[in-house]
Amino acid sequence: MINVTGYLAEEKLEIAKNYLIPKQLDEHGLAKDGLEIDKECLEDIIEEYTHESGVRGLEKQIAKIARVTAKKIALEEEYPKVVKKEHLREYLGLPTAFHDKQQGNEAPGVVTGLAWTELGGEILFVESSVSKGKGVLSMTGNLGDVMKESAQIAWQYIKAHPELAQMDTDQFMGKDIHVHVPEGAVPKDGPSAGITMVSSMVSALRGQALKSGIAMTGEMTLRGRVLPVGGIKEKILAAKRAGVQTIVISEENRKDIEDIKEIYVKGLTFVYVKDIAEVIEAIF
Image 1 (tube, rainbow, N blue to C red):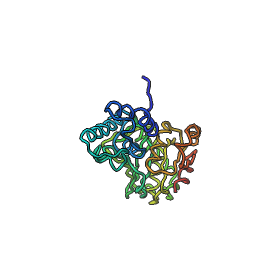
Image 2: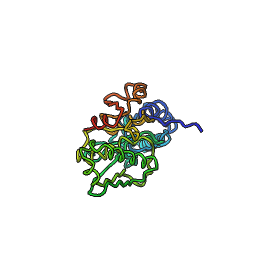
Image 3: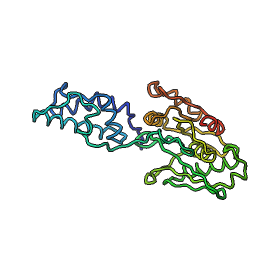
Image 4: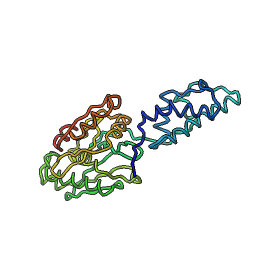
């Protein structure tokens, strides 16, 4: 089996402009200059009306716009020569795909992680809350075995280094912590949530929120070393869509960032880290 990565949003935009729109104009008997869909409108269709790795759904939405336009021409009704984002409700109805936004999640214990899926990159939130107890860790959110292990490693690391949470051992052992990854109906797994887990726990234990606009991806070892992860390009584009400005990532992923075209990383700041101490220093 050969796995092929999905198209980036920017690639879908070019495919739509150069191939899908001309094809649908031809199939619906419309002149080349009879209908135009502007860039912002196409971006909204990609983000809000399709959720896929390919472009089949995107072509269906473009075909729907072409059909409505052809009908209006046949009935001699007025129609916009350039379809803009404000016309989408009329042509396509309400949005059907929703992506998380990073804004509004700046509470203590809430950290933005970056994940790779078959549909491209996504952001996910890891939430932690602290209560009095006996040093027990609990987890919810339909997590797979690998993510559960990441949470346990993060918890054990903080237990061995309570100074990260600005506590001593006795204070720490009097706390229970609950880690939750929202959208429990969606299974979540993968080896890239380690530093997100530890950051969320430390933030909750400190009662201190992270700097705004930060997201992260990276696995950790029990010794606190930050390991590189895959799916970097997709994760970065997901971060940009969500309004992230700073990405914390393993030093060993620097070469992956340098391989990405400048247009995709423009406006983002990367913080390269080697161990958990550097992660904690970067996020507060």
